[in-house]
Image 1 (tube, rainbow, N blue to C red):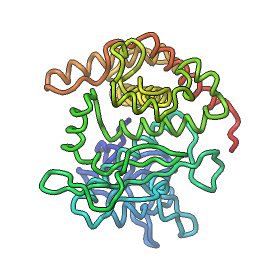
Image 2 (image 1 turned 90 degrees about the vertical axis):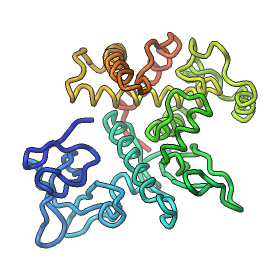
Image 3 (image 1 turned 180 degrees about the vertical axis):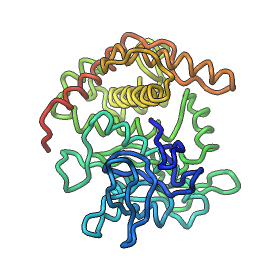
Image 4 (image 1 turned 45 degrees about the vertical axis):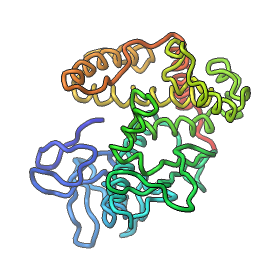
Length: 353
């Protein structure tokens, strides 16, 4: 992620809604793809102040009313869409009558915006129902429990909400936006990382399997990730939670959970690929990496390894978790190569439904 600049020269960041120096309101302009200072218009709305842009804009409803967004929509003849290019994917939002859920929703939206930034950086397709997309994408942020004095209590007569993906619809349990609860789950499940952005990157991996692989490239995927038809997902899930991952999983998978089933292997590896793209984008913009990065997988892995070593040591200085694994197994390298090729081919192909 790059930093941006206010018209006063102060640096702006991706989540900003105000410039701390000149106190201007700021937002994401979809016309020039920058966080920019907003100049109010006499007729209503705002003007983008980025050099050579000047687009007329309106705030997303979830920015102006709900205060969980910072994106703008382009205004034409005094009219604009109600929701921005990220919020329009929402099907269900958290119950805002529950204390703390607005803050949790804001955290979810912040992670989702970073997800879309990386997807757009990779030029990966996505769209909503009714658009020119083979598998429409949507999100639900729901809860099966309520916070009570720092703990989450199950609500009566309500089915459990599982974070997951089905036919283009991604559901995230709201309690994943609670830092304490998410860390408890990370420790209980013996995961090296468990983050909101990690959930989004994993679940979007399932989405892209449906969009780019299903009924199109399944044979090649099977050669790399294994047969997703045998065993069935249900059987594999039951076996995983009864027996856990095989002892040799680090030699074949990016994570223990990836060993559960080829679909989860694909999603976990896809999430790691997005991790690399996002980290390298930030590192290169911030001058943290001096490695040559020409867009090839090998240069990406080399640059990510360099950045990972640096940040791992910085994190250890502060007693934090490592950012990146020190070594990738050859089998994981092969899976990343498949994903890299899949994304490159998608970028090169004509865009059809």
